[in-house]
Image (tube, rainbow, N blue to C red; front, side, top):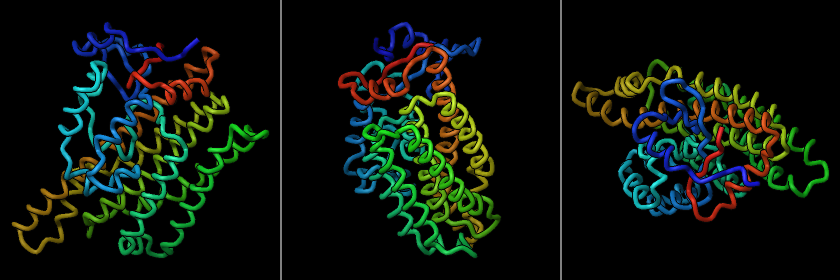
Length: 336
């Protein structure tokens, strides 16, 4: 029996009328808050969005969107293409470009294969190298090559996850990899927190660094969750996703867009330049903040998904495979 189904027309009508609201991947009753379904993007939507952004940047086509490039793109570029794809994408009419980099779609489990995740990791790592001077300043008493070590560990873990289905001891290996990914994320966290907490001398490059580190943190979270679903550790996946949601919420707490923009403008030599620099920074700061908050919401959605699969005795691995193998429909539902 398939787990995932096409979105019923009644759901789309109720969503358009406001009776249903989308919170991360959860479709909820607007009045009671009852979860009606989990929305899951498939490989169809993943391929479409990749083709939509192709040509904007070589880095984007590799799976990572630098903050400076994102702010040069218009949300309508995506929305106009979504309208032409499928009526079911009405649910995505408020999609923000910022969620594409840090939060995937900000909707459902990422269907990207682990080879794609490795490609994204490499793109993030390369962008960090471009920000080398800022990394050196942020780390203060730490050497910037420590980040390279963390990324090497993440890359090794992703390669290991890609071999799970062929391993006789897949359960044990997946558990070890999940722990290793959590450890890597914990090592990246202080770099992010130290920059976000700066009270002066914040720059546009610092915002880009925050974006880059946040993308790496989200990649660790996505890979960890998928690994646990793959080996049917659904209760563990739910518990870890809950902690990830709290962590992303914690990271987003100091990131008020106006505060970040004002800190970036503080070093301007004149009032006019201060206003201009603030206006330039407010867009990236808003994208960064919204994307991190979406990451928190999405991780909370993953908690609910894993609990629902466990409660019904459903297979996490089958859920992932159906979303990855879908060839026609961009969005599917797992009814609650």
